[in-house]
Image (cartoon, rainbow, N blue to C red; front, top):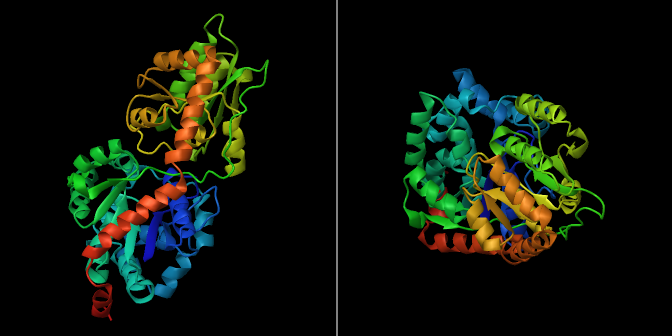
Amino acid sequence: MKIIYLAAGAAGMYCGSCLHDNTLAAALMASGADVLLVPTYTPIRTDEADVSQSRVLFGGINVYLQQLSRVFHYTPRWFDSLLDSPLLLNALTKMNFSVDAAKLGGLTVSMLEGEQGRQRKELDKLVDWLAREVRPDVVHLSNSMLSGMAREIGRRLGVPVVCSLSGEDIFLEKLVAPHYDRARDVLRERARDVTAFVSLNRYFAEYMTEYLDIEPERVHVIPHGLNLAGHGSRRGSSPGEPCTIGYLARICYDKGLHQLVEAFKLLKDQPGLPPVRLRVAGYLGAGDRKYFDELRAKIRDWKLEQDFEYLGELDRAEKVEFLQSLDIMSVPTVYRESKGLSILEALANAVPVVLPAHGAFPELIEDTGGGLLCEPGDPASLAEKLRQLVLDPAQAEALGRQGQAAVHDRYNAARMAERTLALYKQLLPSRVSQDAAAASVR
């Protein structure tokens, strides 16, 4: 079985979807599957060994220029290939181009329109390559915003198209008129061209079934699995040190760092509570610097600077060391989380978590037993649950150990790959002959 996995690059930042896609592809390869992980837009960035191809399809520069002007609909392929250079794309990602959904509505709609959109030339190049050189048995798209590709892939190759569901609603819900309604309509239409969808949890499977207006039986739940190499057990704080509360996620409003900072202030104001400190790590983009500067100003005004530390973006070894230094972790997202990869990573190191009771988090806590839930959007509730674990290290230890056992048992990369391969095999008997489809385009 030959599998093509098309992953959406995240413009140079660590992204949960890219991390998931790379881990899954690597695990599939380790199981003996023939897999090509091919980036779209930009090269992917991962903190594990990168198993993706060096080429980039639907390169971000070409996609943008073809949206901007019809002149670029007719440029020769050799010219396009220069603009798709990974070196050039990586260099441009360092220039902090906007990924603000409010400014990208037209481009989003056009990409969803597939063969009817402004990027038709890029789609033709992709399908030509697949049909004439690769001849896959299965094509897997990393998110539903790539579903505009599915119709042509299915028509010309006659193979199943699988699509992951990875929190794309967060971006789509920030689109503005007139693009929002059009994007929702086209997305529902193009979802019909996808053979099967994959969600990391039941919550998001049910949510996206309604969001995409698709049949529930077409959505399959396959939880994320970690590459557990290097993950171990938390050291936590040494005797006499403050209890360490941690945050590992992108620094932005949506991830809820401001709520954790507010809860931290409430903890520090409580008399008789053991000393606590807050350690924060994660990507900080140019568009979120004002948000973070305002949080740091509050911390200074509250005279809590000595108990707050920002470590920046971490590589894999640094991430594991950071997690193992924590006593508790919290990422109190404002939106309803669909993945929670950093939560699984914390649990893999026996770090208990405190999370808002929405999105995928209640399901994750119920299944792993690795933490506590608080009221969403309520720093006081978050502070109370954190206080419970600060005052009861034995409970924190027990929750962390339960979570660690669950992750090692049910959220490992090998099991994720096994379940994904089983889905591919389930879909293959219904496919149209690939040979006949390939012959039709020659």
